[in-house]
Amino acid sequence: MSRRRGGREARGGGGGRTVLWVLLIVVMAVAVGVALAREATKDDAPDSGAVVESVPTRKLLIREGLRREDIAALLDTETGMSGARYLALTAPGSRGRRMAGTSKPTSLEGFLFPATYEITDDTTPAQLVGDQLDAYEANTSQVNYAYAKSKNLTEYDVLILASMIEREVAVARERPIVAGVMYNRLKAGMRLDIDATVQFALGEWKPELSASDLAIGSPYNTRRFTGLPPGPICNPGLDSIRAAARPAKVPYVYYVARNDGSGRHFFATTPEQFDRDVARSEANAGG
Image (cartoon, rainbow, N blue to C red; front, side, top):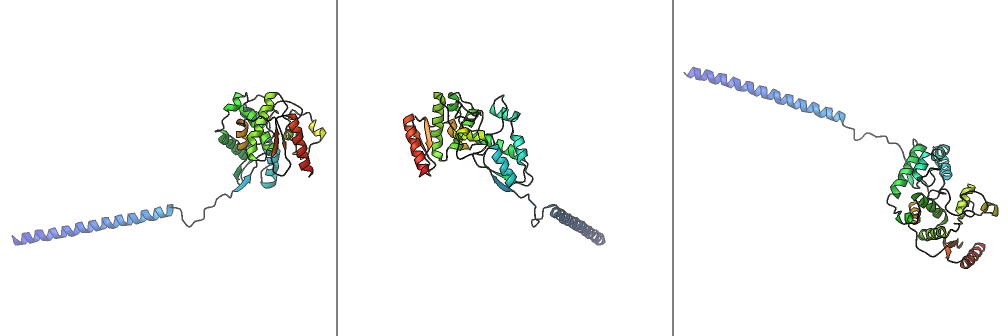
């Protein structure tokens, strides 16, 4: 009896050792598998010390009040983009007609929103134009055009007014006032008499206009023709667009630059007052 018990115990002890060895082999296999998995993961993960190459960018500032031609010249001198291609992309076409809401040949003048754009050596004129149009729509999406529409002016009319304000006004707080003067003159059937529209018709921002300049037969010449010019004369910023959409309610129908270094204007309600303001302006310029 004792031998059998002893034999059974001997066999039972050997079976236990076998189980332990099996468990040890399994544990070792699992450990090796985990280690291999970690190595594989390490190989797949990006090296934190590796240098990741990025495309260098630079900033392109397009100021308020520039024409398409001015922007094209800027591209030629400050970027590797083609100014000629930019002009071709922004010339009168279907996109301009659609944005202006007109059937007439229309360029993208006015819609090329002034801002600072991130560009690279690979940026194309088409991409820049797309960015500018997107910026225009994003920035003007919150502009309230209700007042202008109540005066029978379209959003495109507002953009035309804004472009004139941008070229005429240097002091921000005067933008709504000058807009109010323009609304008053339109309502009264008066010519707008905006020198900047003559400059646009001439194709250059001349500081002084001659009698022959003022007589140019372009429909953009608001010194000769009543009403709004056919389109914007530059690409205005958001402040000018807001002023054109919601002008100040003022009695003035005349204004003239003070020429005293302040960038401000004299405003008048009568021709007599305007004549006196012009004399003061000329005296300041002469002094």
